[in-house]
Image 1 (cartoon, rainbow, N blue to C red):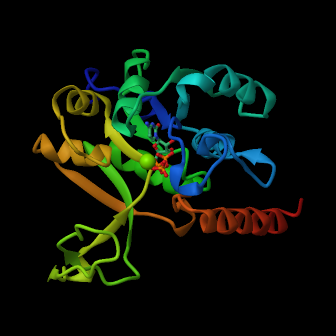
Image 2: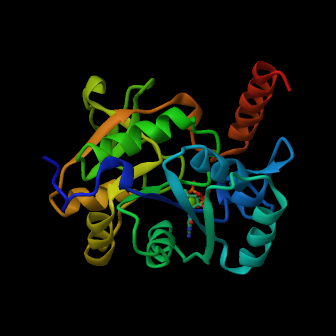
Length: 250
Ligand code: CTP
Ligand code: MG
């Protein structure tokens, strides 16, 4: 017997919020990071395509640099994007957290699963996006894609002056650590509650869910979901795109 009070998985609609309002200070001088080109196409367009590539994603909300909303709208118009996907553009805020909140405020009703995806991770494969959505649909409140670490990590007492040696406090067991990526996937109600109630320094949305005392689970991430942060990351991203082009034969 079917339970009519619960939407069937096929009726669960997914929206993706893409915070893209950062300056990209670590990338060096230039346009806001998300608007810079990778192999001739803006990073943001790659990120939007990565979300829209999932058949489950019906709406993409782009949180644009505040002075760049018109530019982002014309960028979306100028590039080929799937017909089945709707797009909204809203201005961002001073912090990533504020930008995500503005994206959530713009979400129309009817989307039960919400992804939050950094524009700075333009190359995440669709299989990773779908794995996150599937885990939320299967009942998880919050899902993050993550990878084991290559480097050993040390906890230190941060230096007071640049270049000063930093005393090591601890070495967490590497096998228990994960580096988290995006898209992070959420039950919409829980994510909105987290953004309404959690304040202070949180660097990802799943961290806010943890602060609420709710469970966050990890699914396998992908090395191509790396974040473009520093100039060398641009070289890697363009190499990945070039390899894809060769493999796709166009
Ligand atoms: N972001 C945002 N609004 C902000 C700050 C960041 O929407 N006020 C977004 C960025 O556009 C990016 C994502 O959050 O897609 C992850 O942030 P990060 O990689 O730190 O990007 P930037 O903040 O742009 O880079 P930097 O910290 O080097 O300035
Ligand atoms: Mg930043």
